[in-house]
Image 1: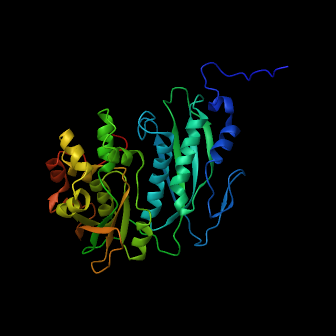
Image 2: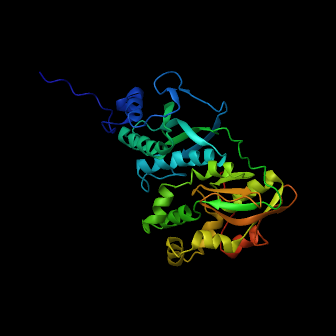
Image 3: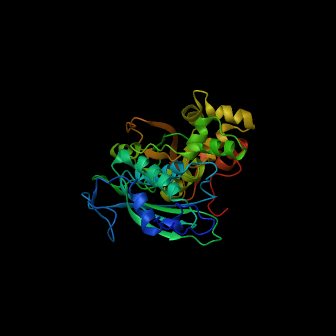
Length: 346
């Protein structure tokens, strides 16, 4: 006698969240989530327990909304997982710390395929694995029918390893402004995707899967960095946060930025030429590369991977940013950038 087939709600794929159920989804996702080296109690209980030898925990949260931060027709599930993890891991690195674990809140429509969620989990696990970090818990909830898609809320926890946290408020006049990582690549990739293309693959991949220089954050802290932030919204915008919090003027050197970000000639110039865009617009205002921007005492030896791109000058609180002595607004206009960076409620 054959077993009765399970009842599948009309229109739902057989592996949808509604069919598999909350605990089935959790089991499948956790099977792909890896193991956190700092976890004494991992996923599956009411809460995880992590070792914190430093006796301080660095915490950050980032929310990704489908249609605003990612599109499923542009990015694979694994891409979304990498991107969601990277946004948080970069914030931890910008404090001079190393990520130890993630917790994830998920809201999704009931017809979301669990295979897609497994892909997201795989991407997160792969992004976290080099640091010995992993997802150790979270929550799932059905999104409202008219919500429009998936929402991922990721919280990362980090360890300072005995270092003092590097804040945005410590820059001093005379400090060197330095950059680790690349700028403009994600913005160029987004411009390509918006026009219906998928090449050059280098910039499209950079948009789908940022490559933050995680190790550069703790290295900067060890080298005496006085202030640091990750560049998630755009160089001018994030340098402006650092300038405001430190009460200084950040004077970026355009020639140094061009040398650091545009030499040798590569994909940014290729895309810029094809689209009629000055690639410096992406360097100055493009977000989501998650490079690190820091200030160092003038006589400090910059760690490997860090390049000088400016100087800290005296300024009243809110003095802001200049580019080779020119007001940032003028510099942005000169390269055709519409704004200093991403506006969250724009």
